[in-house]
Length: 204
Image 1 (cartoon, helix red, strand yellow):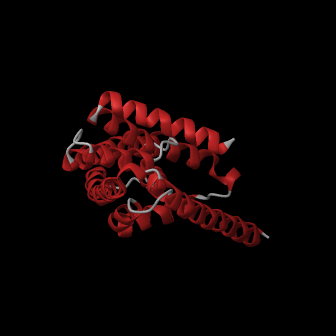
Image 2 (image 1 turned 120 degrees about the vertical axis):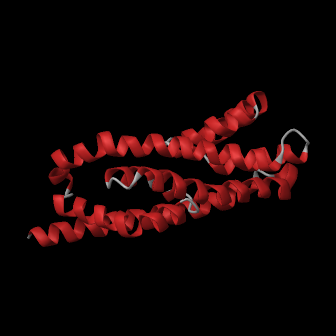
């Protein structure tokens, strides 16, 4: 079932980029960064393959992909500010998130926000969702935009380059990234489980 959905999604991405060019790259990368399940591991390598075919310019692929990342991230950032923070302030206690946790997140992003945004943009899974906590913690907007852009640039360039390197076999790249996605997903689940365990233990 999951494999069928991924196959369909991959075909849709290929169709959109083939018919709309750079605009399609930008929109699709924006959707991924807005926390929707549109994998950049398909978007950028396929675009890199089209560079090999002479359809695209490598640096235009990278720039438009990075701009898409920024646009989608900004959308998620404002969702965090306008929706996420008020929701947590009102209902956080029901999901084990206290005002103290919120203040701790604020301090973290104030101290390490620049580095965390930059590094997160280089990591599968995490890069898609980091904008929400950045918005919830009210990280300064222009700093958020700057580090999102410079963090997304090497990611977009690397994936596009893989598409050039692998050529017509560009789809084989996704398999390796998916394995890394699963590993990070498991680590995130363990981290959430540990957070819940500590909260329950402290309450007792």
